[in-house]
Amino acid sequence: MTLDTNHSAVGSPDRLNAAEWFPVSSSPLPTRVVLLTGPSGSGKSSLAARTGLPVLRLDDFYKEGDDPTLPRVTGSTDIDWDSPLSWDADAAVAAIEELCRTGRTTAPVYSIATSSIVDKEALDIERTPLFVAEGIFAADIVARCEELGVLADALCLCGRPGTTFRRRLLRDLREGRKSVPFLLRRGWRLMRAERAIVGRQTALGAHPCAKGEALGRLAAAAAGRHRTPAAR
Image (cartoon, rainbow, N blue to C red; front, side):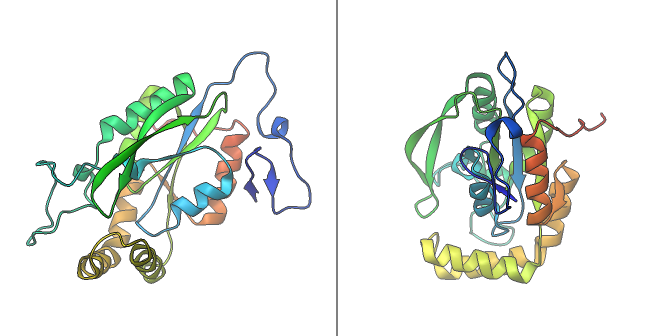
């Protein structure tokens, strides 16, 4: 089951209207976020698009290529774009908090091919009580979103490393994200590390699941059922 742009069920015999997803109330519902993470190539963007919910692309908060704080792959001159140190977590959390508080924010538009911010984009979700923030570092801000009281759920998409490798490589080649040698080196490294990546994201508070379970949890969050905050 997925959601369309009116938050209706798609792919089932019975279509649900918005009132069935979001309980009608005389006062505005608080806006919350579902953080969607998983290894690069796991299908986060396509799943987020299927929900029909507003989406904040967390990968647009990468640091630019000339940032001196960018980390390097051990034993290589390659920038380690899979390290959370290559990403601006503070800016991402600020955008999520602003969306939850005001219903709008301005987010960067990032070019992975040039490792630079190429534009800015206004995102206005109005009074929508749920949106998705997806990216490979989403798990790194689970605790901060819980502390802000804006987290509806945190999910980690996972599957077979070989499938993820093929999906990631085909996407990156199609979009010309980096040079072919770089993509092959990165892809091989990520395939070998995929189970550890999922383990780390899970330890940070993201629930590991396949697409079917993720859609079910997103539907539950859309209906107002939020996960219990982790014990401290």
